[in-house]
Amino acid sequence: MGVKRVTESLKVAIQHLELLENNRVTLDKKIRKGSLLGIIDCTQTKIGHRLLRSEIVAPLCEYKKIIERQELVEELLTSPALHNHISHNLANFHDTDQITIHYTVEPKEFTCTLLKREAINAIRLREVLQKLPGLLKLVRNFDSTLGQRLCKQLEEATSKVSGVVKLLNEKLNKESKTQATTEERRLEAVFCVKPNVDGLLDVARLAYAQTIQEMKRYVQALNEKTADLDARLTYSVKRGYHIRLAQNHLGGVPGIFIELVVQKRCVLCTTEELASMNFKHDQTMHAALKRTEIQLHSIRTTIGEVLPHVYSISDTIALLDLIVCFAWVSKGSPESGPFSRPAILNEPPFDLVIVKGRHLIVESAMEDPEMYTPKDLELNSHQYSLANVVGGNCTGKTTFVKQIAIICIMAHLGCFVPAASCKMPLVNRILTRLGNEDNMEANASTFSLEMSEMAYILNTKALETSHQLVLVDEVGRGTSTEEGFAIAWAMANFLQHRKNTFTIFANHFFRTCQQLGRQVTMKPLHCFVANDTDDTHEEGMEYLSKLAIACGFPQHIANRAAQVKENLEDHQAASLARKQQLKALVRDCKIMSTEEIRQGLAEFAKRQ
Image (cartoon, rainbow, N blue to C red):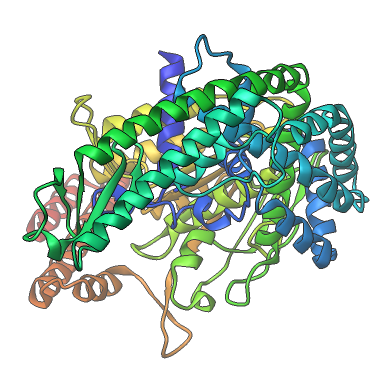
């Protein structure tokens, strides 16, 4: 049950912070572009993309590794030419993880599909290994600790796989390259091995090539026989070789065509003679691939011996691609604000200070990023460990809370952060209570979900060697105002005394500032909307009425709501005055006569 709760909490935090996907739904599908991953993903390889995705969900918690990454990012920023050359060199690297997985598993029997995949992966592996010397030449220019380590790993792995490179060059054609279309990849698989290596293979490939030429001549003869037919020989995995006709020939298709499939812009069909040729083509292709398997088997055996070094190359390229991506992100853009290198604190005093921090996702979604208002935060372990953020609706409380989490995640990735300056302790855990949802399937209301998530936060203690960051947004709004305020105050009062914990507590209860303000470890923060015409700011019912009307709310109902609120405030003020008068009367009873007490009670009853 504990593991399930942790997993669910992680999923909810990833969703609300929009780390991997944007919460907006387009055509019933969530989009990645407006998420943290979509914004900072400048990786050039698939292995780099997967590493970035996994580390956004689980950032580093090791001080030394974070600092080493920051140093390498800073080195790339100070050497733009080296940065550009490495990024360009990584652009065409194949998915080495997929290649190594292919050679890890030994198939019981090689089917035609597996044989084609075997040939294609051998070609891709050769292309990767041939690019390593050029990449290694660039990596040797690194001066940072991590850069030199990456260089050493590449040098060792490259020397170990030199025998594989030699064998691949001996067995495979020099012209063999990874192709784009299905037909080109199939042809490349058949002709990947050099000629004159296996006589039977050469005979099988000759028969295979002759079959393809026969089908091309057959289709050409059909076009010459029937005017304006414009038949084209096409290949697909499912149908093999077949004929493609334009849609306007549907009414005049000769009777020799069979297996017609009408599509939007064309007609797919074949003939009995072409189907016979296609069957012969499949037989010759299988024969050629069977002979190719004999040559590729020796390659597979040799690769299996150095597979750990291929894994090392894959990990090194992925990490290098990740660091290059962070360097692109840390450069920023003319439209966005500055990025800075965060200071990760490993020794006391532990401070959480962010100057002019920005929410990267919100800023990128704005038409004019310069209109974004940066926000500051200053907490420390010896005085202020909790920030109580209050303010009206649409004043930026939730954005501010999420901004802190995103900056913290980027800092622990080893990337620069969207802020003028930043320093924070090593954080091993980010606990969040965000959003306002229910779960009908689990028969859980909004309030019960809030309490379940807060229970996990309150029962999770920070480690002695690192800190945890707690982000709570408008807890207690799923119940009445008085009950919600009481619960929010009790939680905040507990969290502000927790050791090695920084808490950002956002809510609508202005009274929490008054109550928690008596505690020396609470720092009050106030979000408001500035007026464009002057330096004043708006809040309260007047601001809420304007906001509701701007959203399309009927103005007369908004005016009525403002009047009701004013009446309630007058009633509360009158009730408070009566209570104070009654308290004064009770207090003075000891020195008053019986007649004076009767007169006082009569006056109090008259005012009621």
